[in-house]
Image (cartoon, rainbow, N blue to C red; front, side, top):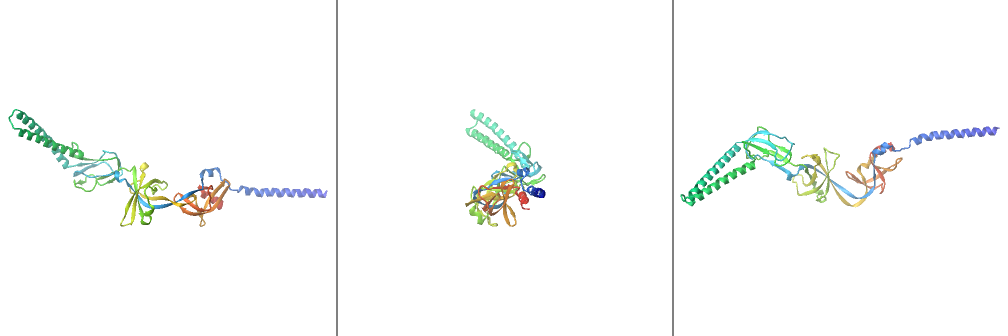
Length: 362
């Protein structure tokens, strides 16, 4: 009987210990890390692969309009500016009125037109009557020839005045209308209503430029000149659109140095979709070129710098994520090359990895 009681008591103690052990293990299992569905949708995974190492040259530049598509408009006549129809930055179409000038010179051209038309009419009537007299043998042939020359001279003068009207765009009024020669944007304006203008004014009134395509002029230091070549791919960033990269290429190298800055200019041509790039914008240019060696490459944003080391989050599964130290060989704007710590085929977290890092390492 005593043995039975002892066995029963021992069994109860064992069962109680097992129950306590399970209760202690339950919280530990609850603490096991696992990415939720929400977190999985927020992260981005990338596979490590070997690539040719690229280097990057960072240059400072500015946006300018394509000089081949920029026209400066000068006043062809003097006078008083009666109206200005556009402002700086306006989009205009070819032939659109920009300003109106009331000009005495235009009035004089109108007088010359009337005079030339009258002289031609008189010369034609004189030629007609002279030819009639010549056929009747009442005047010599010399008079008929002279009459024809007078008609030719009057016709030439009328053609000259008409050509002036065509060049200046003069109508039937004494006002001179300045029109846009191309479609584009007003990128410079030096005229206001009421301004007095001289016909020999050396300053342009308007500058109209097409900015569907723009240039970026960047400065290259002397030490970097050997690295720059025609056709190099260029990434351009601006302060206004810091998250957007504008793609272009080097299409001209100015093979002279600025005497003041001792730098050489290069030109990058860009398509200006949506007219986001404005003339005189500050621009940062990144030129990429390849080196001879190869290394494992990952997105630059995947690297975490903490405790004086570089780390990446290696993804094995939703419940198995490794924090691994790596050695960075070179870090560019979008790509980082790893000299040790990773191998081809490793899967890493390249977006929102800092949240995972904090959850595992805090």
